[in-house]
Length: 301
Image (cartoon, rainbow, N blue to C red):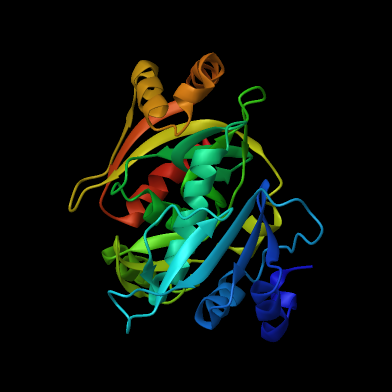
């Protein structure tokens, strides 16, 4: 059963009660909140995710009211994961991005049976294209364009790799666009489903893109990587898609992994195997059409 099959009343009652269990890729997450505005956003944006009733939840996420003596007239919320608060209180209007960032943080800090790359990941022609990048490189925006042009979304944030099998696990979550990227995607992808624009967050204005239905329906289908492309959006730059030495790709991948040092030798072996078996490139682009055409050619070879 999918979340969209619940009426809003049923959905909100579950959130406000014992919590709603939702399956997202390899994880089950229990979400609790009594905040009606957050419930409305989640009901729309999580519609295609399956319920995970009766399943063990790896994470227990809550968004709860927070009262402040310093700001008695400003509604505040606090994000909790397993009753721990990793963030300071935030305005109630920021509940959706706070929840999404909190779940990402919990995955990054607590999952160590998989190697976690800070990377977007999409699948085409049966293989994964990894897009590792530092914040501000435009990987989420590029990933949003790709997933609406025939690529299956794995994630805009995590490349989840099983070290022994070299399989990547999909985790197609909401994708937060920031600031100018919101209008860029609205113009380039009028068919994309975006949540509300939320202003004044720690990252500016944020709007979340809902993953395509097929990507969520196929979120238990892993695949191996064949291409590693390090993207960088540069205004007015001519397109560049250049080969990258595997030694440099190794260093960049290892430094972009959340838990590389913790996994030690198994992480070293996994990254070495990955770069040996992938084509490694560096991408500089300024417009979607040329970038997508270049990546289509790469993944069709």
